[in-house]
Image 1 (cartoon, rainbow, N blue to C red):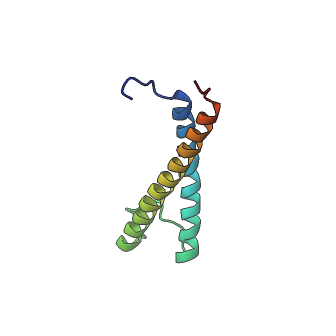
Image 2 (tube, helix red, strand yellow):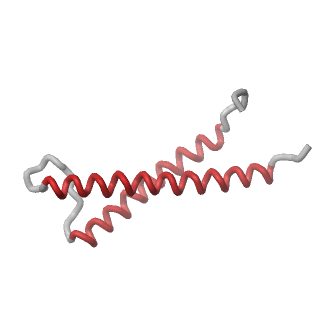
Image 3 (cartoon, rainbow, N blue to C red):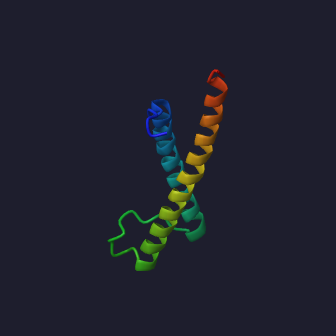
Length: 92
């Protein structure tokens, strides 16, 4: 395993998947925040109009939500990519 070359195709695909996942998760979490709280997500956590509880709550929701989305999507995509590669690789 140590002498294997990195799979450049997966690195490129994984990077694009990561960008798309981050964008989609941010949009979905922002939408959910508005539906639950009735207010727009705080843009500047240091603003006097944003309470400490709201700033911390938003940070926790975004941090956990983004991390969970990245883990689920990356693991699923890698599994599917590996299965696809196994089908394309000639058997000796």
